Amino acid sequence: MTQNPKIYKINKSHRLLIKRKTTESIISKIINTSFEKFGYKKTFDVEKLKKN
Image (cartoon, rainbow, N blue to C red):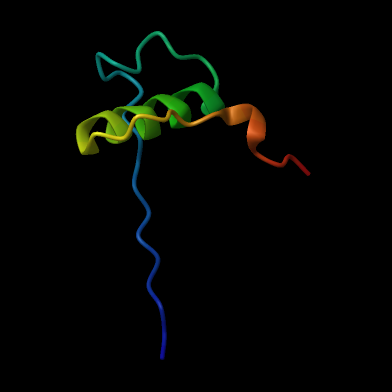
């Protein structure tokens, strides 16, 4: 069975992302916005990610 990954292009000129400069802050904003839409109380913390 083959898997087809879905790749999305991020629109950096979107009104919520225009002020974000780094990739980490853009991804964090996208995840936190989706958390708010689903009603989660916690927010996504970029510092907890492992960097290799």
